[in-house]
Length: 143
Image 1 (cartoon, rainbow, N blue to C red):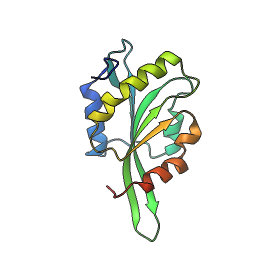
Image 2: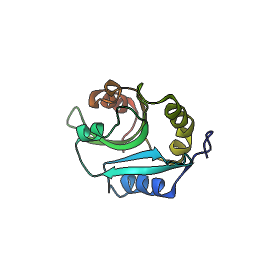
Image 3: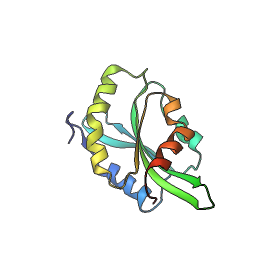
């Protein structure tokens, strides 16, 4: 349970494990339930398009996301894959929503074992493919 009293739904953990272990999804979007008590799955997708993922981020509301980020590394070393946790909190989101998401993040983040990088986004430049690539390629090791 988080500082805000929000807990993580079992379905949220299952969707993460389906992405991580089963490669069933490319990304999972999470939100806080209407009654502000639980972090739930809002959407899952198998789309390989990063632009489609970005298109799912709301302009005026917060959410969390897990993305199986694949990228090529130089020197003919091939592809790498990192699981990235996004906290999306645009400047235009309501203050109350930003506060609830900020205080609830740790509950979800602690429950998701195996995440390589955390990305905090307040505008689309902070979650662009190039920005995320720079962040994940700096982290040691590969999955």
